[in-house]
Image 1: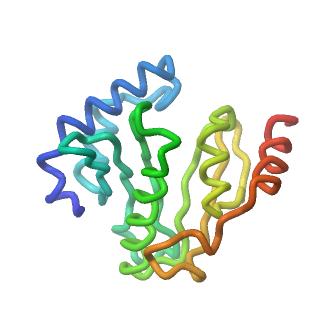
Image 2: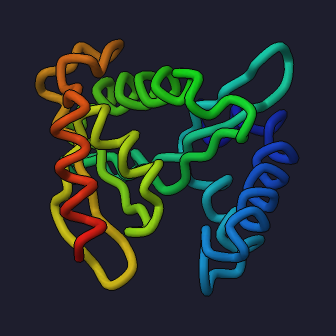
Length: 172
């Protein structure tokens, strides 16, 4: 969805983000004015929304407005606790990858907190790789040249590869 198409989900996106910020004790978007951040994201980002039986259960906000860059940037990806580990987040990521490919991007990039091991495990399992470590975050990238826009499985890592990466992160 382009920014103008997300209007019916604005309240849900705001509430899901507030709920997750609370669940993570303010660490999801630390040091950022949440309302200002959401205003910017809602105005400029594209969205893939996870709608389950008429209820918004998650979303991925990603930037595609700079076509000169090779990478689309995932700025916020949330799913509700009740749908985590269901495989639905993978479907959302596939939609995002397909949209990014249509815009001509070669990569998807994102930043994730170093202590968010479940998210890192998910991204590594989808074929993302760690490209940089920052003070608090890890920058990850997915090259989409092997993707057809509908299935990220060609880049999937097996469980032992993901576990080895997680071990490196936790030993830092």
